[in-house]
Image 1 (cartoon, rainbow, N blue to C red):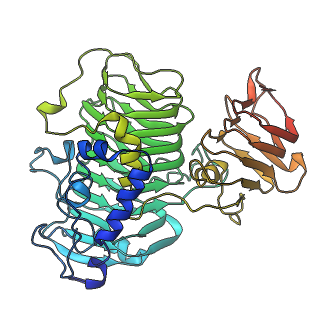
Image 2: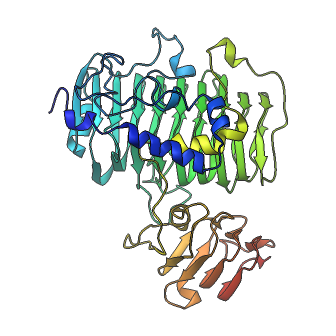
Image 3: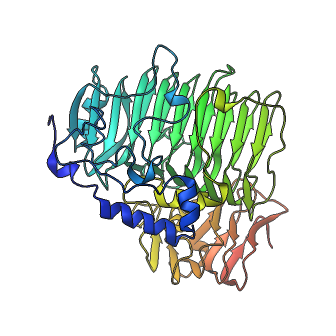
Length: 501
């Protein structure tokens, strides 16, 4: 167990790296004046100094982990305390401070992380490198913990975190990925409870600048009367069920979601069931195939300043009771429900102070600053392999498409090895010149199927599909293969149990 400051880690976040992130935002189309107005491009960022815990931050470990501090990145992108309900005093706490004041420890192996997570005392746990779990685990987390990724690249593979009746926990600046069970996109196998974070009856939890992707069940599940939770500046990607809240009839949960980037997901973005107060603002949702934000039953929602792009059913409220306030949201190339207001819900400003980023600036701001340090934009590839036996680059078509950069500069081939891929697959409109192909040249060897609705949607111009079969689990009258892009070609494609349109 290593305790105390480590100069090599504290030196990782330098001003020139921040400038790269700034240029990324500007290149994404946000003008300098709009960026200044947003409040995120202020004084130059100050990274942690080389002497461990910086006096400007206190003993919270942010400097030790090499995180930007105080007004870094212009103020609100990297704060030293949560904005929203996680920062509200309640349940005997003044807010969420995690392991602040406890020992500072370093985890670079699964064994170390496992021991620190369930330790009885307050800890600031700094994660280093890529921690790969040989068998999936959901790590037991006790109260008063901070889990902080060191600089760029900290990652937990094939594991998640379980919080049961605990309070005061922080997760910041690392990736949780790849616990997906090939072929179980719907997450219904009895052994598939592979959440990124599961919270049951917890209070004061802050999840910030994280990336959750390609997991087995939910990316983050907030269940059973949790309260005072903030999800901020995270990336949720390439998955079926992103964010779920509920699993109880009690209307007690108060949740804030702001400046998150939810992309290439299917459902629960988020699903908010019986929340006493859900404040959802300044999030960016894109490329979502089932539904976006959904209020259920008695949930009270305020949804403001969010940007939805290419989202099916972006905003809706259903079930008895509940209220929805929707204001200043943008729906860009969306279809279906866009939020019919019902009631007054609640006033977030009565609970805490917050500042809204102009909605038009959200795509560039969130793309530039959400997720761990270093960003989450995938590397360009010309060929991506998908295989259900673990030998490919990915185990699902959704993950493969998600690895193609938006507005990719050149053609990409997604090569499917033999097997049955049970998932709704989409070639999104911003992934142009993509070829989806069976690897053997025999259509019967690669089968795409789905339990309901469209199995394969080709929305990108210049796409090609060849050497595979598109079907459904049962005979249906509607389309299982649908084309909305232009100049799409098909060769040796068999359509069964449905139609092509």
